[in-house]
Image 1: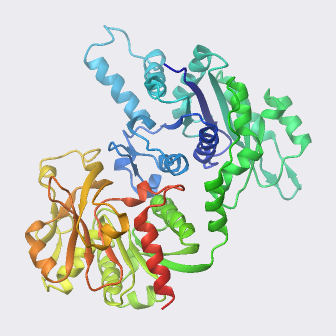
Image 2 (image 1 turned 90 degrees about the vertical axis):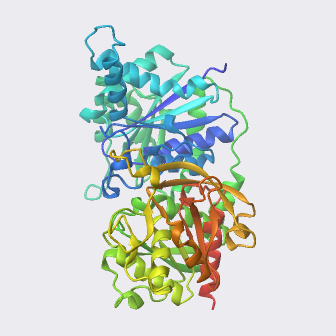
Length: 537
């Protein structure tokens, strides 16, 4: 079995510096050099997973093939590396404590007093090494959530300290991402916050091998010398991470800074194949040099926080580059849409995307947006709840089924077009109990959706409790909304499309989760293309 090497990424000074992007960029460069690499995220919050968190709290909840509800950083990992993540790639403090407490209840500690050290730290170390022990990966990069100095992060930093000592210098290294702020009044970059951050990390027993410094201005030699001296880091291991135009520039910037070479030197690994990143560069050229511009309306309930729709936004970027078009997103709060103001709010859009969500807030606004897209022949894309609203709108306004609704919003609706899945009716706990992960879907012959995918059986990721009520299927199809994708085992309707519309598709699954730089999702590519064609009419 191959000897797996470990890279730990911590953050200091402030949050939101982009540890996930730096980790993903490093992994991409190592992957280009021929090393099988994966990334995992350790989140210090006590929730078991982000599945029960409001999107305003933590942004999007990303779902893996094996049904894990995870941090949105895992989406970045997949989009950069083009390989799927799993349950093992995201660990929370809640999951760690739950596991240790369950072991204690089973008597596995043989009467010992259960403590942070060694029991919690041992559990963390085991979770960190799960991916390495599969023999599948040469290098495992572990991102520690939060900021050095946070109380909740202390057990993770202690676990990293222990692993660095146990595995040895050539098998495990530490990267510290920090901030070099620019004081405009003084006209200077200041290193003191980084010095204090490194000092705090070293007080926990971890001395960083590499410093990655976020900055608005280039670091001169004087600053690098100062950082090396005061932070006990070799000068060549001081990496500048200057603000980039797009996150997809970061791998190229890290290549210029030789981050991958420094990491390989520290881990005593050979410098195989210099990264060419040809496909990546071609993507960036198309992304930065569009031939035209379109505007797509994103109808959602959490539009104040764009991270709530992170994967959708990135999928639109991938599809835009494929079509050599710039996709401008018009953020539209469904709560503020009414049948009276919809024409004004949605005027001039080339495409309309009704986003996923839960609960009854803003639902009528989404339904009004669907109606506008349907009647005005504007390309429409409904995802999960968006697909359900499309079916409800059609039932109300074409079939004239008064009061048609989802039982999620109205348990007493006379026409439960969308109903709670049978297996969900006895479930009490909310966390991790939805229909999650990858499920098969069979696409109908001569359908638009099959022409887009160019295959009959697809697999897509799900995250929902409610489903299309097949009692209404015949009525709806007779009127012109066709179920063109179904689960081959359960007969659950996965895709609907209109026969008398240039591009109107609703999907129960989440295609945005599978779009990557190297493999833009075909549904998004087709939707953007249809929106471009609409803009030219």
